[in-house]
Amino acid sequence: MQVLEETIARIEHDRVTNSFVGRTFDRARREAAGIDQRRRSGHTLPMLAGVPYAVKNLFDIQGLVTLAGGKINASNPTAARDATLVTRMSDAGAVLVGTLNMDEHAYGFTTENTHFGATRNPHDPTRVAGGSSGGSAAAVANGLVSLTLGSDTNGSIRVPASLCGTFGLKPTFGRLSRSGSFPFVASLDHVGPFAANAADLAAVYDALQGADTTDPACAQRAADTVAVQLIGAPWREDVCLAAAKALEDAGVAQCRIA
Image 1: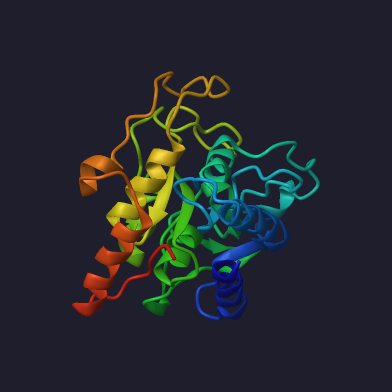
Image 2 (image 1 turned 90 degrees about the vertical axis):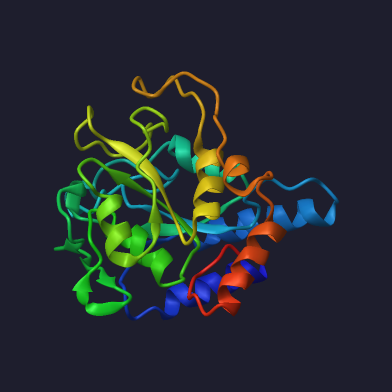
């Protein structure tokens, strides 16, 4: 719970990036309390237990309207269930803290949204964060959260990741389920994660993989884990934190999974 409250404080005090357009703090506190209870009970915790994350404003979150960056969608019904990738993040123990700014309907490369304002690059607020998943990249680059989800049709993960200096993954088409995400171009839409380093990106990618019959384009195959190939052992918090400390001692600025 302490990690979550520190994350909420960072989000509430951010005056630089304008990354967040929605907060799910009540839900996050319920999820974090559940993780703490499992830890106190001695249960084995899942891979991303207690890690705060946020999602681009085009993923369905149960009980909320999926705006996809456009106020024209505000009168739509609330989502009946979480998007598949949000469910998989929850299953992995991650804690959802909010939704992130984007170009309206994912149509753009700068995240200068008419309704919610522009998301700024945390390295230089006079510059854009890229888009359309600019909020997802800027939130990680500014250390607000360690993990985010975005989408990529024609560069919308790759562009903001490069401009903000984060790690972003546009996976092979059909590798991750798009079920419960607002569509742009069905034959080209991809969804994927952002993270502050390659080990964290591999860990979240592993958590997101798997077959899903509710997305006709999703490959009906089991997860092909990559974290073990990247760091030589199954993802563990102590391994990643040790690597992060080594980078920190070397003077390399980064944010990390706490």
